[in-house]
Length: 591
Image 1: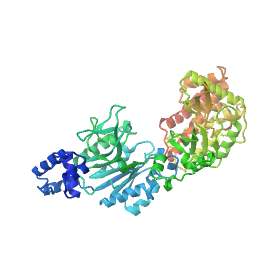
Image 2 (image 1 turned 30 degrees about the vertical axis):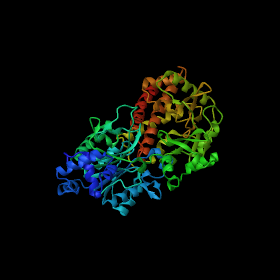
Image 3 (image 1 turned 90 degrees about the vertical axis):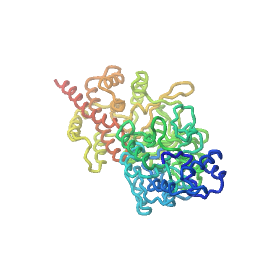
Image 4 (image 1 turned 45 degrees about the horizontal axis):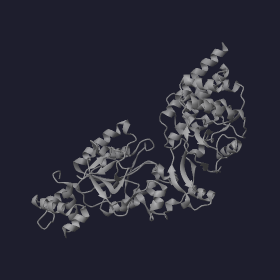
Protein backbone atom coordinates (compact mmCIF):
# COMPACT_ATOMS: atom_id res chain seq x y z
CA UNK A 1 0.00 0.00 0.00
CA UNK A 2 2.92 2.30 0.72
CA UNK A 3 3.81 2.38 -2.97
CA UNK A 4 0.45 3.83 -3.93
CA UNK A 5 -0.17 7.57 -3.94
CA UNK A 6 -3.16 9.21 -2.28
CA UNK A 7 -4.59 9.89 -5.73
CA UNK A 8 -4.50 6.18 -6.54
CA UNK A 9 -5.97 5.18 -3.19
CA UNK A 10 -8.82 7.69 -3.50
CA UNK A 11 -9.74 6.35 -6.94
CA UNK A 12 -9.74 2.80 -5.59
CA UNK A 13 -12.00 3.92 -2.74
CA UNK A 14 -14.45 5.45 -5.19
CA UNK A 15 -14.50 2.38 -7.38
CA UNK A 16 -15.11 0.16 -4.37
CA UNK A 17 -18.39 1.98 -3.75
CA UNK A 18 -19.40 3.04 -7.26
CA UNK A 19 -19.16 1.51 -10.72
CA UNK A 20 -17.07 3.44 -13.21
CA UNK A 21 -19.18 5.57 -15.53
CA UNK A 22 -16.88 8.39 -16.65
CA UNK A 23 -13.60 10.04 -15.80
CA UNK A 24 -15.44 13.35 -15.42
CA UNK A 25 -17.66 11.96 -12.65
CA UNK A 26 -14.60 10.44 -10.99
CA UNK A 27 -12.83 13.80 -11.15
CA UNK A 28 -15.82 15.59 -9.58
CA UNK A 29 -15.86 13.16 -6.65
CA UNK A 30 -12.12 13.08 -5.95
CA UNK A 31 -11.46 16.76 -6.85
CA UNK A 32 -8.53 15.73 -9.03
CA UNK A 33 -8.07 17.07 -12.55
CA UNK A 34 -9.17 15.06 -15.56
CA UNK A 35 -5.55 14.73 -16.62
CA UNK A 36 -4.64 13.38 -13.20
CA UNK A 37 -7.56 10.93 -13.27
CA UNK A 38 -6.56 9.68 -16.71
CA UNK A 39 -2.92 9.06 -15.87
CA UNK A 40 -3.75 7.52 -12.47
CA UNK A 41 -6.23 5.05 -13.96
CA UNK A 42 -3.61 3.92 -16.46
CA UNK A 43 -1.09 3.38 -13.66
CA UNK A 44 -3.56 1.36 -11.59
CA UNK A 45 -4.29 -0.86 -14.57
CA UNK A 46 -0.58 -1.32 -15.29
CA UNK A 47 0.09 -2.32 -11.67
CA UNK A 48 -2.80 -4.82 -11.66
CA UNK A 49 -5.05 -2.98 -9.17
CA UNK A 50 -7.70 -2.42 -11.86
CA UNK A 51 -8.85 -4.34 -14.87
CA UNK A 52 -9.06 -2.61 -18.22
CA UNK A 53 -12.76 -2.11 -17.45
CA UNK A 54 -11.69 -0.27 -14.26
CA UNK A 55 -12.93 -2.95 -11.89
CA UNK A 56 -11.05 -3.87 -8.72
CA UNK A 57 -8.71 -6.83 -8.93
CA UNK A 58 -8.01 -9.35 -6.15
CA UNK A 59 -4.80 -7.42 -5.46
CA UNK A 60 -6.87 -4.30 -4.75
CA UNK A 61 -9.35 -6.24 -2.64
CA UNK A 62 -6.49 -7.41 -0.41
CA UNK A 63 -5.70 -3.77 0.34
CA UNK A 64 -9.26 -3.21 1.48
CA UNK A 65 -9.21 -6.29 3.69
CA UNK A 66 -6.11 -5.04 5.55
CA UNK A 67 -7.56 -1.57 6.14
CA UNK A 68 -11.20 -2.43 6.88
CA UNK A 69 -12.63 -0.23 9.72
CA UNK A 70 -13.15 -2.20 12.94
CA UNK A 71 -13.55 0.20 15.86
CA UNK A 72 -14.29 3.73 17.01
CA UNK A 73 -13.21 5.81 19.99
CA UNK A 74 -15.36 8.81 20.92
CA UNK A 75 -13.66 11.46 23.06
CA UNK A 76 -16.24 12.90 25.49
CA UNK A 77 -14.43 13.57 28.77
CA UNK A 78 -14.03 17.34 28.77
CA UNK A 79 -15.99 20.11 30.47
CA UNK A 80 -17.04 21.83 27.26
CA UNK A 81 -16.48 25.11 29.10
CA UNK A 82 -17.31 27.28 26.10
CA UNK A 83 -20.85 25.88 26.09
CA UNK A 84 -21.88 28.15 28.97
CA UNK A 85 -24.46 28.47 30.31
CA UNK A 86 -25.79 25.02 29.36
CA UNK A 87 -22.65 22.98 30.16
CA UNK A 88 -23.55 23.17 33.85
CA UNK A 89 -26.51 20.87 33.17
CA UNK A 90 -25.07 18.15 30.92
CA UNK A 91 -22.10 17.18 28.78
CA UNK A 92 -22.13 18.68 25.31
CA UNK A 93 -22.18 15.11 23.96
CA UNK A 94 -25.91 15.29 24.70
CA UNK A 95 -26.67 18.53 22.90
CA UNK A 96 -29.67 18.05 20.65
CA UNK A 97 -29.62 19.02 16.99
CA UNK A 98 -32.78 18.45 14.99
CA UNK A 99 -34.12 16.19 17.70
CA UNK A 100 -31.02 13.97 17.96
CA UNK A 101 -28.36 13.90 20.67
CA UNK A 102 -24.91 14.48 19.18
CA UNK A 103 -23.35 11.32 20.57
CA UNK A 104 -26.30 9.12 19.66
CA UNK A 105 -26.20 10.42 16.09
CA UNK A 106 -22.49 9.57 15.93
CA UNK A 107 -23.08 6.07 17.29
CA UNK A 108 -25.90 5.45 14.83
CA UNK A 109 -23.76 6.68 11.93
CA UNK A 110 -21.04 4.25 13.00
CA UNK A 111 -23.56 1.44 13.16
CA UNK A 112 -24.69 2.26 9.62
CA UNK A 113 -21.25 1.30 8.31
CA UNK A 114 -20.95 -1.77 10.50
CA UNK A 115 -18.87 -0.33 13.37
CA UNK A 116 -20.28 -1.66 16.67
CA UNK A 117 -17.02 -1.91 18.69
CA UNK A 118 -17.26 1.60 20.16
CA UNK A 119 -15.41 2.99 23.19
CA UNK A 120 -16.32 6.32 24.77
CA UNK A 121 -13.81 8.13 26.99
CA UNK A 122 -15.81 9.97 29.65
CA UNK A 123 -15.02 12.23 32.58
CA UNK A 124 -17.19 15.29 33.23
CA UNK A 125 -20.73 14.18 34.15
CA UNK A 126 -19.68 10.61 33.32
CA UNK A 127 -22.87 9.20 34.86
CA UNK A 128 -24.92 10.66 32.02
CA UNK A 129 -23.26 8.24 29.58
CA UNK A 130 -24.14 5.05 31.49
CA UNK A 131 -27.40 4.33 29.62
CA UNK A 132 -25.46 4.09 26.35
CA UNK A 133 -23.91 0.84 27.58
CA UNK A 134 -27.30 -0.88 27.49
CA UNK A 135 -28.75 0.97 24.52
CA UNK A 136 -25.78 0.65 22.15
CA UNK A 137 -23.46 -1.82 23.92
CA UNK A 138 -20.60 0.65 24.05
CA UNK A 139 -17.66 0.52 26.46
CA UNK A 140 -17.01 3.45 28.80
CA UNK A 141 -13.43 4.42 29.70
CA UNK A 142 -13.24 6.86 32.61
CA UNK A 143 -10.67 9.66 32.50
CA UNK A 144 -10.25 10.58 36.16
CA UNK A 145 -7.97 13.50 35.24
CA UNK A 146 -10.34 15.25 32.84
CA UNK A 147 -10.22 18.44 34.94
CA UNK A 148 -6.48 19.00 34.61
CA UNK A 149 -5.46 17.21 31.39
CA UNK A 150 -6.53 17.55 27.78
CA UNK A 151 -7.76 14.90 25.35
CA UNK A 152 -4.30 13.55 24.55
CA UNK A 153 -4.58 11.80 27.92
CA UNK A 154 -8.11 10.67 27.12
CA UNK A 155 -7.02 8.96 23.92
CA UNK A 156 -3.95 7.47 25.60
CA UNK A 157 -6.31 5.63 27.98
CA UNK A 158 -7.81 3.91 24.92
CA UNK A 159 -4.55 3.50 23.01
CA UNK A 160 -4.70 -0.30 23.15
CA UNK A 161 -7.97 -0.13 21.19
CA UNK A 162 -6.53 1.75 18.24
CA UNK A 163 -6.58 -0.79 15.41
CA UNK A 164 -8.22 0.35 12.17
CA UNK A 165 -10.12 2.79 14.34
CA UNK A 166 -12.07 6.02 13.92
CA UNK A 167 -11.20 8.76 16.44
CA UNK A 168 -14.24 10.98 16.97
CA UNK A 169 -14.58 14.21 18.98
CA UNK A 170 -18.02 14.34 20.54
CA UNK A 171 -18.80 17.94 19.53
CA UNK A 172 -19.04 17.33 15.77
CA UNK A 173 -22.35 17.29 13.93
CA UNK A 174 -22.24 15.97 10.38
CA UNK A 175 -25.01 16.33 7.85
CA UNK A 176 -23.86 13.22 6.00
CA UNK A 177 -22.31 10.11 7.50
CA UNK A 178 -18.56 10.79 7.84
CA UNK A 179 -17.73 7.10 8.31
CA UNK A 180 -17.30 4.53 5.56
CA UNK A 181 -17.47 0.75 5.22
CA UNK A 182 -14.14 0.82 3.41
CA UNK A 183 -10.90 2.67 4.05
CA UNK A 184 -7.41 2.37 2.59
CA UNK A 185 -5.20 4.73 4.58
CA UNK A 186 -4.94 6.74 7.77
CA UNK A 187 -6.37 10.25 7.54
CA UNK A 188 -7.32 13.36 9.51
CA UNK A 189 -10.42 15.28 8.48
CA UNK A 190 -10.26 18.96 7.58
CA UNK A 191 -12.69 21.12 5.64
CA UNK A 192 -12.24 23.30 2.59
CA UNK A 193 -12.95 26.36 4.76
CA UNK A 194 -9.89 28.56 5.17
CA UNK A 195 -9.35 30.03 8.64
CA UNK A 196 -6.65 31.57 10.83
CA UNK A 197 -7.76 29.32 13.67
CA UNK A 198 -6.26 26.18 12.15
CA UNK A 199 -2.90 24.53 12.83
CA UNK A 200 -2.58 22.88 9.42
CA UNK A 201 -3.08 23.40 5.71
CA UNK A 202 -3.48 20.92 2.86
CA UNK A 203 -0.52 21.21 0.50
CA UNK A 204 -0.58 20.66 -3.24
CA UNK A 205 1.09 17.29 -2.62
CA UNK A 206 -1.77 16.19 -0.33
CA UNK A 207 0.06 16.56 2.97
CA UNK A 208 -1.09 18.27 6.19
CA UNK A 209 1.58 20.86 6.88
CA UNK A 210 1.78 22.62 10.25
CA UNK A 211 1.25 26.37 10.03
CA UNK A 212 4.13 28.34 11.54
CA UNK A 213 3.15 31.79 10.29
CA UNK A 214 0.42 33.24 12.51
CA UNK A 215 -0.94 35.29 9.62
CA UNK A 216 -1.31 32.26 7.36
CA UNK A 217 -4.67 30.61 6.92
CA UNK A 218 -5.22 26.88 7.08
CA UNK A 219 -7.95 24.33 6.56
CA UNK A 220 -10.49 24.24 9.39
CA UNK A 221 -9.77 21.18 11.54
CA UNK A 222 -12.83 18.98 11.99
CA UNK A 223 -10.98 16.49 14.13
CA UNK A 224 -12.40 13.12 13.04
CA UNK A 225 -9.59 10.75 12.09
CA UNK A 226 -9.00 7.20 10.92
CA UNK A 227 -5.91 5.29 12.06
CA UNK A 228 -4.91 2.02 10.46
CA UNK A 229 -1.99 -0.35 9.98
CA UNK A 230 1.61 0.57 10.72
CA UNK A 231 0.72 4.27 10.85
CA UNK A 232 -1.69 3.56 13.71
CA UNK A 233 1.01 1.58 15.55
CA UNK A 234 3.48 4.47 15.32
CA UNK A 235 0.87 6.96 16.50
CA UNK A 236 -0.03 4.74 19.47
CA UNK A 237 3.62 4.61 20.56
CA UNK A 238 4.00 8.36 20.30
CA UNK A 239 0.68 8.96 22.04
CA UNK A 240 1.78 6.95 25.08
CA UNK A 241 5.21 8.61 25.14
CA UNK A 242 3.69 12.11 25.08
CA UNK A 243 1.19 11.13 27.77
CA UNK A 244 4.12 10.46 30.14
CA UNK A 245 5.60 13.90 29.38
CA UNK A 246 4.04 16.46 31.76
CA UNK A 247 4.66 19.27 29.28
CA UNK A 248 1.89 17.71 27.15
CA UNK A 249 -0.75 17.66 29.92
CA UNK A 250 -2.71 20.41 28.18
CA UNK A 251 -2.19 19.13 24.65
CA UNK A 252 -4.70 17.84 22.15
CA UNK A 253 -4.20 14.31 20.90
CA UNK A 254 -3.30 15.65 17.45
CA UNK A 255 0.18 16.37 18.86
CA UNK A 256 0.89 12.65 18.31
CA UNK A 257 0.21 13.03 14.57
CA UNK A 258 3.12 15.36 13.83
CA UNK A 259 6.60 14.58 12.60
CA UNK A 260 8.80 17.50 11.57
CA UNK A 261 5.88 19.93 11.25
CA UNK A 262 3.83 17.58 9.09
CA UNK A 263 1.10 15.15 10.04
CA UNK A 264 2.01 11.53 9.32
CA UNK A 265 -1.50 10.87 8.00
CA UNK A 266 -3.15 12.06 4.82
CA UNK A 267 -5.76 14.82 4.78
CA UNK A 268 -9.38 13.98 4.16
CA UNK A 269 -10.77 17.25 2.89
CA UNK A 270 -14.55 17.67 2.98
CA UNK A 271 -17.06 20.44 2.35
CA UNK A 272 -17.58 22.78 5.29
CA UNK A 273 -21.30 22.80 4.48
CA UNK A 274 -21.62 19.25 5.76
CA UNK A 275 -19.99 19.63 9.18
CA UNK A 276 -20.40 21.81 12.24
CA UNK A 277 -18.26 21.93 15.35
CA UNK A 278 -20.41 22.95 18.32
CA UNK A 279 -18.27 24.65 20.91
CA UNK A 280 -20.52 27.50 22.01
CA UNK A 281 -24.15 28.20 22.83
CA UNK A 282 -24.43 30.49 19.83
CA UNK A 283 -22.97 27.90 17.43
CA UNK A 284 -25.71 25.53 18.55
CA UNK A 285 -28.31 28.28 18.14
CA UNK A 286 -27.05 29.02 14.62
CA UNK A 287 -27.23 25.34 13.68
CA UNK A 288 -30.63 24.64 15.21
CA UNK A 289 -32.51 27.54 16.76
CA UNK A 290 -35.23 25.15 17.91
CA UNK A 291 -32.92 22.79 19.77
CA UNK A 292 -34.26 21.74 23.16
CA UNK A 293 -30.69 22.07 24.45
CA UNK A 294 -30.92 25.84 24.13
CA UNK A 295 -33.29 25.88 27.08
CA UNK A 296 -31.39 27.63 29.87
CA UNK A 297 -32.66 29.25 33.02
CA UNK A 298 -29.63 31.56 32.92
CA UNK A 299 -30.57 32.87 29.47
CA UNK A 300 -34.20 33.12 30.60
CA UNK A 301 -33.14 35.25 33.59
CA UNK A 302 -31.21 37.61 31.34
CA UNK A 303 -34.09 37.89 28.88
CA UNK A 304 -36.57 38.60 31.67
CA UNK A 305 -34.30 41.09 33.47
CA UNK A 306 -33.69 43.11 30.29
CA UNK A 307 -37.16 42.52 28.81
CA UNK A 308 -35.86 40.98 25.57
CA UNK A 309 -36.19 37.74 23.62
CA UNK A 310 -33.49 35.11 24.34
CA UNK A 311 -32.15 35.64 20.82
CA UNK A 312 -31.20 39.20 21.83
CA UNK A 313 -28.60 37.78 24.22
CA UNK A 314 -25.50 37.58 22.01
CA UNK A 315 -21.71 37.36 22.04
CA UNK A 316 -21.80 34.74 24.78
CA UNK A 317 -18.21 34.00 25.77
CA UNK A 318 -16.92 31.88 28.61
CA UNK A 319 -14.63 33.62 31.04
CA UNK A 320 -11.81 31.86 32.87
CA UNK A 321 -13.20 29.31 35.26
CA UNK A 322 -12.91 30.65 38.79
CA UNK A 323 -12.23 28.67 41.94
CA UNK A 324 -15.86 28.74 42.99
CA UNK A 325 -17.94 29.87 40.01
CA UNK A 326 -18.30 29.84 36.27
CA UNK A 327 -18.94 33.11 34.54
CA UNK A 328 -19.71 34.19 31.02
CA UNK A 329 -19.70 37.45 29.13
CA UNK A 330 -22.69 38.48 27.04
CA UNK A 331 -24.09 41.46 25.18
CA UNK A 332 -27.61 42.78 25.55
CA UNK A 333 -28.97 46.10 24.31
CA UNK A 334 -25.47 47.01 23.08
CA UNK A 335 -23.99 46.72 26.58
CA UNK A 336 -21.66 44.05 27.92
CA UNK A 337 -22.38 42.17 31.13
CA UNK A 338 -21.01 39.24 33.11
CA UNK A 339 -23.25 36.52 34.49
CA UNK A 340 -22.02 34.35 37.33
CA UNK A 341 -23.20 30.77 37.67
CA UNK A 342 -22.16 28.98 40.87
CA UNK A 343 -19.86 26.02 40.29
CA UNK A 344 -20.01 22.41 41.46
CA UNK A 345 -20.72 22.06 45.17
CA UNK A 346 -20.90 25.81 45.72
CA UNK A 347 -24.24 25.57 47.46
CA UNK A 348 -22.38 23.75 50.24
CA UNK A 349 -19.83 26.55 50.55
CA UNK A 350 -21.69 29.83 50.17
CA UNK A 351 -24.87 31.11 51.81
CA UNK A 352 -26.48 33.22 49.09
CA UNK A 353 -28.83 34.96 51.51
CA UNK A 354 -25.78 36.15 53.44
CA UNK A 355 -24.16 37.28 50.22
CA UNK A 356 -27.21 39.36 49.33
CA UNK A 357 -27.04 40.97 52.77
CA UNK A 358 -23.40 41.91 52.14
CA UNK A 359 -24.17 43.55 48.80
CA UNK A 360 -26.92 45.55 50.48
CA UNK A 361 -24.40 46.72 53.12
CA UNK A 362 -21.78 47.86 50.60
CA UNK A 363 -24.25 49.40 48.15
CA UNK A 364 -23.13 52.83 46.89
CA UNK A 365 -19.99 52.73 49.07
CA UNK A 366 -17.70 53.01 46.00
CA UNK A 367 -16.15 49.66 46.79
CA UNK A 368 -17.60 47.98 43.68
CA UNK A 369 -20.46 48.40 41.21
CA UNK A 370 -23.87 47.36 42.47
CA UNK A 371 -25.04 44.08 40.89
CA UNK A 372 -27.56 44.48 38.06
CA UNK A 373 -29.20 41.26 39.24
CA UNK A 374 -28.63 38.99 42.22
CA UNK A 375 -30.71 35.94 43.10
CA UNK A 376 -30.24 35.05 46.79
CA UNK A 377 -31.63 31.57 46.18
CA UNK A 378 -29.43 30.16 43.42
CA UNK A 379 -26.54 32.65 43.38
CA UNK A 380 -27.02 33.87 39.80
CA UNK A 381 -25.55 37.34 39.49
CA UNK A 382 -25.30 39.86 36.65
CA UNK A 383 -22.81 42.73 36.76
CA UNK A 384 -21.68 45.34 34.27
CA UNK A 385 -18.60 44.46 32.25
CA UNK A 386 -15.67 46.81 32.70
CA UNK A 387 -13.47 47.48 29.68
CA UNK A 388 -9.67 47.51 29.87
CA UNK A 389 -9.61 45.77 33.23
CA UNK A 390 -6.56 44.30 34.84
CA UNK A 391 -6.15 42.58 38.17
CA UNK A 392 -3.74 43.65 40.85
CA UNK A 393 -0.16 42.55 40.37
CA UNK A 394 0.68 41.61 43.94
CA UNK A 395 4.39 41.83 43.12
CA UNK A 396 4.08 45.42 41.90
CA UNK A 397 4.60 47.89 44.74
CA UNK A 398 2.40 50.62 43.29
CA UNK A 399 -0.49 48.19 42.77
CA UNK A 400 0.01 46.77 46.25
CA UNK A 401 -0.12 50.18 47.93
CA UNK A 402 -3.34 51.12 46.13
CA UNK A 403 -5.05 47.83 46.97
CA UNK A 404 -4.06 47.94 50.63
CA UNK A 405 -5.26 51.54 50.80
CA UNK A 406 -8.68 50.48 49.48
CA UNK A 407 -8.77 47.53 51.87
CA UNK A 408 -7.95 49.78 54.83
CA UNK A 409 -10.62 52.30 53.75
CA UNK A 410 -13.19 49.51 53.58
CA UNK A 411 -12.27 48.29 57.08
CA UNK A 412 -12.50 51.81 58.49
CA UNK A 413 -16.13 51.99 57.37
CA UNK A 414 -16.96 49.44 60.14
CA UNK A 415 -19.87 48.05 58.13
CA UNK A 416 -22.15 45.62 59.93
CA UNK A 417 -24.11 42.54 58.80
CA UNK A 418 -26.00 39.87 60.72
CA UNK A 419 -23.71 36.92 60.02
CA UNK A 420 -20.17 35.96 60.95
CA UNK A 421 -17.44 34.10 59.13
CA UNK A 422 -15.92 31.96 61.87
CA UNK A 423 -12.56 30.60 60.71
CA UNK A 424 -12.44 27.52 62.90
CA UNK A 425 -16.08 26.60 62.26
CA UNK A 426 -15.51 26.81 58.52
CA UNK A 427 -12.28 24.83 58.79
CA UNK A 428 -14.20 21.99 60.43
CA UNK A 429 -17.14 22.41 58.07
CA UNK A 430 -15.00 22.00 54.96
CA UNK A 431 -13.42 18.91 56.50
CA UNK A 432 -16.87 17.42 57.11
CA UNK A 433 -17.67 17.86 53.42
CA UNK A 434 -15.05 15.19 52.64
CA UNK A 435 -17.73 12.63 53.50
CA UNK A 436 -15.52 10.56 55.78
CA UNK A 437 -12.48 10.48 53.51
CA UNK A 438 -9.09 11.04 55.08
CA UNK A 439 -6.99 14.03 54.14
CA UNK A 440 -4.54 13.56 51.30
CA UNK A 441 -1.82 14.86 53.65
CA UNK A 442 -0.11 12.25 55.81
CA UNK A 443 0.42 14.61 58.78
CA UNK A 444 -2.94 16.40 58.54
CA UNK A 445 -4.11 15.52 62.07
CA UNK A 446 -0.90 16.86 63.58
CA UNK A 447 -1.09 20.03 61.48
CA UNK A 448 -4.72 20.57 62.47
CA UNK A 449 -3.85 20.05 66.15
CA UNK A 450 -1.14 22.71 65.92
CA UNK A 451 -3.44 25.18 64.16
CA UNK A 452 -6.12 24.78 66.82
CA UNK A 453 -3.50 25.48 69.48
CA UNK A 454 -3.42 29.05 68.14
CA UNK A 455 -7.10 29.62 68.87
CA UNK A 456 -6.58 30.60 72.50
CA UNK A 457 -4.12 33.33 71.53
CA UNK A 458 -6.41 34.64 68.78
CA UNK A 459 -9.40 34.70 71.14
CA UNK A 460 -7.44 36.60 73.79
CA UNK A 461 -6.51 39.45 71.43
CA UNK A 462 -8.67 42.60 71.23
CA UNK A 463 -10.55 42.89 67.93
CA UNK A 464 -12.68 45.50 66.23
CA UNK A 465 -15.00 43.15 64.33
CA UNK A 466 -16.70 44.49 61.23
CA UNK A 467 -17.63 43.33 57.75
CA UNK A 468 -14.56 41.59 56.37
CA UNK A 469 -14.08 40.49 52.78
CA UNK A 470 -12.47 37.09 53.59
CA UNK A 471 -11.61 36.51 49.89
CA UNK A 472 -9.37 39.58 49.52
CA UNK A 473 -6.96 38.16 46.97
CA UNK A 474 -5.13 40.14 44.32
CA UNK A 475 -7.36 38.81 41.51
CA UNK A 476 -10.38 40.41 43.18
CA UNK A 477 -8.87 43.91 43.00
CA UNK A 478 -9.70 45.27 39.55
CA UNK A 479 -8.06 48.32 37.98
CA UNK A 480 -10.00 49.97 35.15
CA UNK A 481 -10.44 53.33 33.41
CA UNK A 482 -13.50 55.53 33.73
CA UNK A 483 -13.74 59.02 32.24
CA UNK A 484 -9.98 59.06 31.78
CA UNK A 485 -9.30 58.20 35.42
CA UNK A 486 -7.92 55.00 36.87
CA UNK A 487 -10.41 53.32 39.19
CA UNK A 488 -10.14 50.38 41.55
CA UNK A 489 -12.80 47.92 42.69
CA UNK A 490 -12.89 45.04 45.13
CA UNK A 491 -15.19 42.31 43.79
CA UNK A 492 -16.52 38.83 44.75
CA UNK A 493 -18.03 39.27 48.21
CA UNK A 494 -19.64 35.86 48.56
CA UNK A 495 -17.59 34.77 51.59
CA UNK A 496 -17.75 38.13 53.37
CA UNK A 497 -19.04 38.35 56.95
CA UNK A 498 -18.32 39.77 60.38
CA UNK A 499 -14.74 39.03 61.41
CA UNK A 500 -11.51 40.64 62.57
CA UNK A 501 -10.56 42.74 59.50
CA UNK A 502 -6.91 41.71 59.96
CA UNK A 503 -7.95 38.36 58.49
CA UNK A 504 -8.07 40.11 55.11
CA UNK A 505 -4.35 40.90 55.40
CA UNK A 506 -3.58 37.24 55.94
CA UNK A 507 -5.83 36.23 53.07
CA UNK A 508 -4.21 38.67 50.64
CA UNK A 509 -0.78 37.31 51.51
CA UNK A 510 -1.57 33.61 51.21
CA UNK A 511 -3.47 34.05 47.94
CA UNK A 512 -0.44 35.93 46.58
CA UNK A 513 1.75 33.07 47.83
CA UNK A 514 4.08 35.53 49.52
CA UNK A 515 7.22 34.39 51.27
CA UNK A 516 8.01 35.52 54.84
CA UNK A 517 9.71 38.75 53.75
CA UNK A 518 6.85 39.72 51.45
CA UNK A 519 4.30 38.85 54.13
CA UNK A 520 5.98 41.11 56.67
CA UNK A 521 6.17 43.90 54.12
CA UNK A 522 2.43 43.53 53.49
CA UNK A 523 1.73 43.87 57.22
CA UNK A 524 4.03 46.89 57.47
CA UNK A 525 2.29 48.53 54.54
CA UNK A 526 -1.17 48.10 56.09
CA UNK A 527 -0.02 49.47 59.47
CA UNK A 528 2.35 52.09 58.05
CA UNK A 529 5.28 50.22 59.68
CA UNK A 530 3.68 50.54 63.12
CA UNK A 531 2.29 47.06 63.66
CA UNK A 532 2.57 45.94 67.33
CA UNK A 533 4.16 42.54 67.92
CA UNK A 534 0.92 41.16 69.37
CA UNK A 535 -1.02 42.02 66.19
CA UNK A 536 1.75 40.65 63.95
CA UNK A 537 1.65 37.40 65.93
CA UNK A 538 -2.15 37.35 65.57
CA UNK A 539 -1.87 37.81 61.78
CA UNK A 540 0.68 34.97 61.67
CA UNK A 541 -1.94 32.87 63.46
CA UNK A 542 -4.54 33.89 60.88
CA UNK A 543 -2.16 32.90 58.07
CA UNK A 544 -1.79 29.42 59.57
CA UNK A 545 -5.53 29.03 60.18
CA UNK A 546 -6.54 30.39 56.78
CA UNK A 547 -3.92 28.24 55.05
CA UNK A 548 -5.49 25.10 56.52
CA UNK A 549 -8.99 26.47 55.90
CA UNK A 550 -8.41 26.86 52.17
CA UNK A 551 -6.43 23.62 52.04
CA UNK A 552 -9.52 21.83 53.39
CA UNK A 553 -11.65 23.74 50.92
CA UNK A 554 -9.37 22.61 48.07
CA UNK A 555 -9.64 19.00 49.20
CA UNK A 556 -13.43 19.23 49.03
CA UNK A 557 -13.36 20.88 45.60
CA UNK A 558 -10.92 18.19 44.43
CA UNK A 559 -13.61 15.61 45.17
CA UNK A 560 -15.86 17.62 42.84
CA UNK A 561 -13.30 17.26 40.02
CA UNK A 562 -11.83 20.77 40.42
CA UNK A 563 -8.05 21.01 40.91
CA UNK A 564 -5.89 24.03 41.72
CA UNK A 565 -2.35 22.74 41.28
CA UNK A 566 0.33 24.28 43.44
CA UNK A 567 -2.15 26.65 45.12
CA UNK A 568 -3.59 23.90 47.33
CA UNK A 569 -0.15 22.65 48.33
CA UNK A 570 0.97 26.20 49.16
CA UNK A 571 -1.99 26.69 51.51
CA UNK A 572 -1.09 23.59 53.48
CA UNK A 573 2.50 24.81 53.77
CA UNK A 574 1.26 28.12 55.21
CA UNK A 575 -0.62 26.19 57.91
CA UNK A 576 2.55 24.40 58.98
CA UNK A 577 5.13 27.16 58.60
CA UNK A 578 3.15 30.02 60.12
CA UNK A 579 2.21 27.91 63.11
CA UNK A 580 5.93 27.89 63.83
CA UNK A 581 6.39 31.62 63.11
CA UNK A 582 3.41 32.47 65.31
CA UNK A 583 4.63 30.28 68.17
CA UNK A 584 8.08 31.85 68.04
CA UNK A 585 6.64 35.37 68.22
CA UNK A 586 4.11 34.46 70.93
CA UNK A 587 6.75 32.70 73.03
CA UNK A 588 9.05 35.71 72.62
CA UNK A 589 6.38 38.00 74.07
CA UNK A 590 6.08 35.90 77.25
CA UNK A 591 9.77 36.00 78.07
